[in-house]
Picture 1: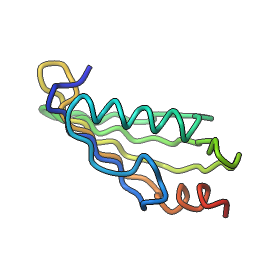
Picture 2: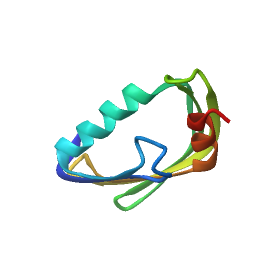
Picture 3: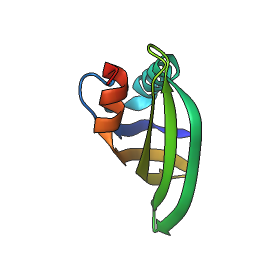
Length: 107
C-alpha cells in the first residue's frame, strides 16, 4: 500500500496527536495507531478526485469523534497523494486544524 520510504504529513498544533511528519513504514504505522487511539470517524466523504501524472488530489469532508472527551469536529479537506509503482509514496493533508484543536481541547 505504501512505499518503504513513504512520507506522510498531517498539519496541526502539538495538541493534535496525529499531527506531524512521518517517514517510512514504521512511522506510518505509528501515525495510524495514533489515529485509531485518538479519533473515531463519524463520516468521511471524498467528493472530487483530480489526477495528473503521479499526483492525485482528493477533495472532501469529514467528521471525527474525539475519543478522550466525546466532542466532534468537521472540516473540508484536501489530500495530495503521490503514487509510485502503484503505492503511496507521499501524502499531505490540508484541513481546518483549528476545529480539531478546539475539539481536542474541549472547546
